[in-house]
Image (spheres, rainbow, N blue to C red):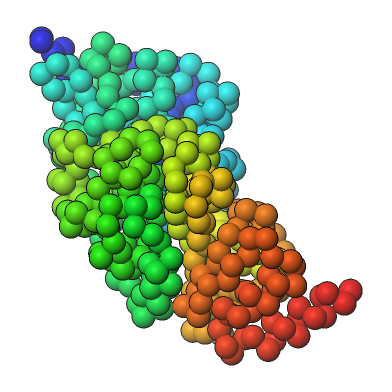
Amino acid sequence: MNITNPGVADDVVAHVGPGTDIIIPLANGEPVTLIDALECHADELRGVRIHQMHALHDRPYLAGEFGDNLRHVSYFLSHVTRPHFRSGTIDLVPNNFSEMRDILRTNTRDPLILATASPPDRHGYFSLGLNADYVCSFIGRARFFLEANQHVPRTFGRNQVHISQVVGWSEADYPLIEVPPAQPRDADRRIAAYLAERIPNGATLQTGIGAIPNAVLSALADHRDLGVHTELLSDGVMDLVERGVVTGVAKQLNRTKTVGTFALGTTQLYDFLDENAAFELWPVRYVNDPRVIAQERNFVSINSTIAVDLLGQCASETIGGSYYSSSGGQADFARGAMYSDGGQGFVVLHSTTAGGTVSKIVTQLAPGDVVTTLKNTVDKVVTEWGVAELRGRSLRQRAEALIGIAHPDHRDRLRHEAARVAAR
């Protein structure tokens, strides 16, 4: 097939008018040279909004350097966008990850999708590489301008864009951002051991990134025929696929396939995903839909939180009443696991912070803290001191179970405070 010749990054500016809503994928899906071009021409723009979750590249426009000409709308704060949110130069929209497509479709007008992609193949198809997320739901339904980067792997699933579906494309050559696996500590390994003994062979897993998820995945090395249906594909998932632990043969949906909606990790992971038909990237509106998740038997959801109160409410996006991230897909998967036949939803956290002086099991959440996962949804809470099973338990039983997995240094105080609160 005769592939249309690429243009240059600056060509994207011709497709941006006053008030244009631009949507870009999260993490490595951000087309660096295209956003560079927009910043270079920012004095020509008027009222342009860039919508994105979890940005990895710090930029002048995030700091408000172009005023209302070019402004960022975030749907999940990262280490990059967090300080800009606190400074008031970006906006944050609350959401469940599964609902991002619908939120963007409702709140944008004639959006322009800018994304990084693999170079087109001989049939004229680009792959969105490490991403499907909310962006792939707009394929064939919105304007696309792509940045083809030689470092982006060609992946499969529902993230293919044909040359006829783009208004333009350009080429780029820069390395992708790597996030090496966090090294687990003793507390992480203890948490992982509690989970591993409760996860049956043939279960389908959702887990995230970080020291505890990495420890959990490592602890599953002797399991058999696990499946993966998760928003994030990480190095830990890759390791289990290579070992033959993850086969997907017991899955009800996408049998034998490892399914995610984006990938983030090391170059080794990115190379492993390249043209690997065992992996598929699907829209987040499918991957994170609790109704889809519930169709899998023995679904296991593993999510981290920042604080848990004695009712079982999980605050996973604020610290001391200040926003740290956002909801992401935690509530999506917790609800899906709740409805799964044999499903289990685990919420994991260290029992303390600040060198052991502050308990993360608390009598009441701090003023301003946001509840991410409701008490009625939370199934099991795990710290390095054990597992608190909450589903179907009374308020008194919940408090006792949670105090039982708090750090021993804080248990007496929690019991005293719990009794005082109950007496009001």
